[in-house]
Length: 350
Image (cartoon, rainbow, N blue to C red; front, side, top):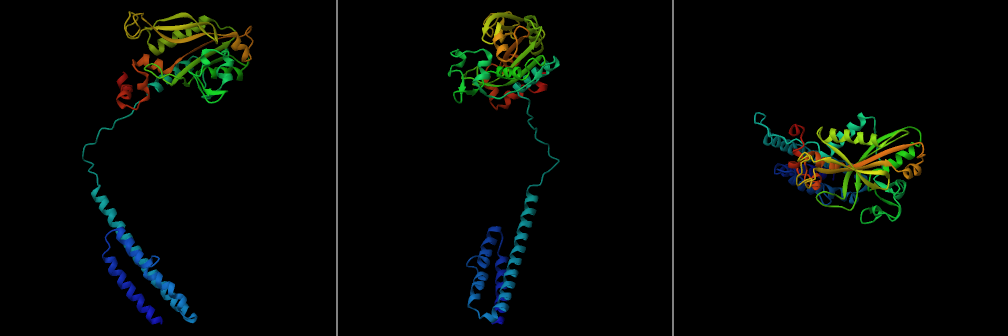
């Protein structure tokens, strides 16, 4: 019986070699492998017949069958390696690169105007001794409104303006919430000079407003802070960011968290203050809101308004970028159009 299986071993290997000669691709090899080693393969069926062999002969017959399986597996693996090597050679030959050919011009990206103006703002205020802080975008009603002297029923709280997550949490409508957190963390420990650039969210969506926009606010608290300090700070900011010829004017206004409050305008960057369609022939464009920190805000955040004074100001980062780079539609800043971004390459701006 052993001789029969040895003879079968030779027959199987001869048959396999003929089959492998006709194999050209990996898919062909899969079929051959299934023929010999699959569930109903030739070698597999030999193994299944072991149960019918007399016990005293199973050892010698089993060794022959194992040799058959080993030889078949080795031949199939050799063919597999050969196919892979040939495929790699063909790929290397077909995909070779002629390094003498001229290269294609790569389109280099450029910094987004939002990031560019943010960096300029941060660099300016850091040079003036301010800290750059950040805070959570998902804010509580307490820090977003209550600590900023915004009472219940105020229009700012209207659900038409704010994105509420639940009764007490909302996406912050202004970065002033970071000011409240900063005051709470530094109660009468040291003077505060900080700005907080970041994202804010309101229910707007048109050419000059977006439901998500960048905002930065500044806060100074010390024992001898005046409106004159605020005026000087904002004049330096406007001239640095928008040009030395920029003029600044203050108009009385009202904000719940400042008293007195002012609206700050700058001379129109397009007409230089002469009057045009952009500034509606007034020569001025509104830039930001500001004022002296309201005593109620100081008090609610742990400061004694009899000892400490402060000023605060805030504006949209997108708005500043639109003014600085003459961008007509805020929505352009949230597209991925490389033609728009190309305008803000450092070389293009020189």
